[in-house]
Length: 407
Ligand code: SER
Image 1 (cartoon, rainbow, N blue to C red):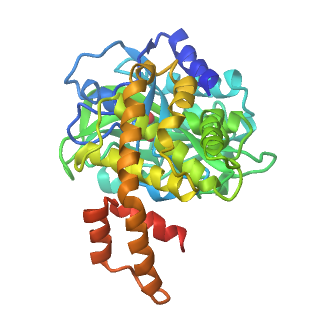
Image 2: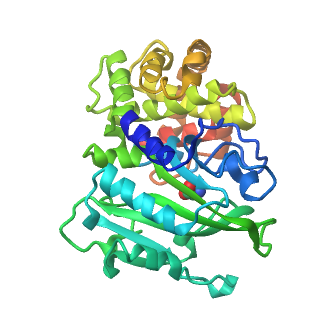
Image 3: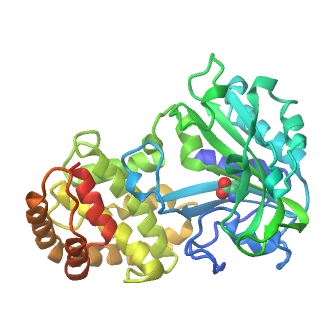
């Protein structure tokens, strides 16, 4: 993982990009709670409100997204914490270089089989007055045969940060893990073997307000994002992002500290613990403390979910803080903030788990009694979920996670 990240940053540095450290998980941008994409720190640059740090930049941005938290640990590809590798042009180069370099990095530096790639381009959307992106299509056709260059609709091929902000048509690169076939029909179908690995956004517009008309940006720009965990899984020949070295080490540490088998019955719990440890540690390193509101509550929810899994697999004593050295060892060289904050990460995790353990057992007992009383297909009353939240410190999604585990 470290080498794959380094190869990416190096490749773009050699092409005149300024290597930037990952920005904080706490964005300056007030429209989002946490950093969700590599472009976020550069939003004011795209909008022309801030001077560009350089004409071109590259980074591996730490990101947190909690919208799919219930799938974390249970699937091969969901995380709350991930790294987004990116390269940016702030009104400097545009589509041609973005496409040619992405292609050259994947096929020459990473050595992936060119025949397994599919590129998508934006087919346009008349209802929004958006033209088809034939420019991107034609640039891809220089690298790929026509049946590997596919049109896509606004949902897949027009990237927007949110309801407002910079946006533009995009091209995605999809990779077929199987090969030796035409997998065009499997692109964007959630097929486990045909994955989107890189999104190249041609930033051209700003949506100043929700549902407002888009206005052209002062300078067309490039914003790309590739998930480090996903590309690492492909390069390391793994089907599951959690088998990538960066996460596998944490899963093994969690199993080892729990006297358990990393691949046994409790495998999902170890995966959740590994993911949630990364989110929690990086949030603390960026100055977030567990609390009952805002980012602090996002942190608390993530921590407590991880801690409940640690408890469930039989850990009598707090577990998560004991895994911090493994995390620092595997990621602390690149993310020096982890090293700097190691003591406070450890202490905050230990304190939170110690406190939570005081109410966890009683809360679980109450929940057990209530679920025993439920008939087939009956829902847990909201009042019980509220009591668990209010008296026992169970965030609602923790209760949901426990119930999901019981079917
Ligand atoms: N902003 C785009 C994304 O998040 C590309 O970096 O996918």
